[in-house]
Amino acid sequence: MNRVKGILLTVFAATSLGFIPLFAKIAYANGFNPYTFSLFRSLFATIELFILLKIRKIAYTLEKEQYITLFKASLMGHSLAMLTLSSSYNYMSIGLATTIHFIYPVAVMVGSIFFFNGKIDKRKVFSLILSLAGMYFLAGFNSLGSTSIIGVLLSLISGFFYAYYILIVAYGNIKEINSFVLIFYISLFNSYILFAISVFMGKLEIGYTFEGIVSTVFVALVANLIGMVSFKTGLKVISATTAAILSTFEPITSLILGMLVFKDILSWYHIAGSILIIVSATIVAFRKKVLKIL
Image (cartoon, rainbow, N blue to C red):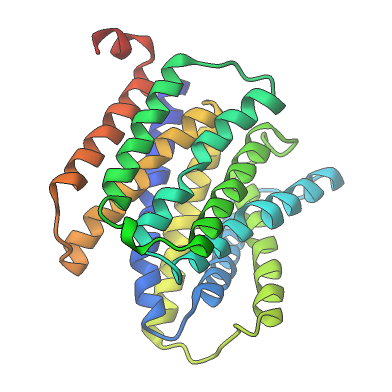
């Protein structure tokens, strides 16, 4: 039952994180840039989580070594993954950048094997191949003409940063920390780091509209408070590789929202990609039984 709960939480997390492009488009149209959007997302999430911790009377004092690990997870993982992926959108289509970013399930699998004594699981390898093919159809198909070396490098780097974040959360000394506490500190450290980077890069622009601020408040609520917390909780009971593969549900949510809100056109390759990702997730979720059927 715990494994089923972990799978459902991870899929739910991916669905929640799929809202990010929607909120980002609204924020970018209302005075925000990738730097300030990421900064305010983390800042508002910190405030929301702090209030929640106080209301629920959850202790948030940790060991010194855990603070160091959380800072590394933020700096070399989550915050830089957000910035590099957002920056890649300036050089190539969002769809193709997202496709390349999803190299992180491969990086997580390889990292688990070489650094954390993980085993090579043929079922997961097959599932991973299906999910990557699904990502190509779903997000990157028909957009190869808009490639850019800088964009490719940025989106690749973002994938490796995010893989590092998943691995350190899954195997580090912060694994057993309360999920709300962990995401509170990740969001807090992200706020400091992103503020410093925004100032250094001269990107701390001021001119936000009320609608833009509201979008960052909601992305903090949906992505950090709900999505990241659910993902962290799921990681407690399923492997990092399984969680990374199940995360490919994220772009399906973005696709559906694009159709509903921005009237994006649904093409045959979107349907094909969604089916491949769903089949991939089913194989991971139900283990060898599904693979025998196929």
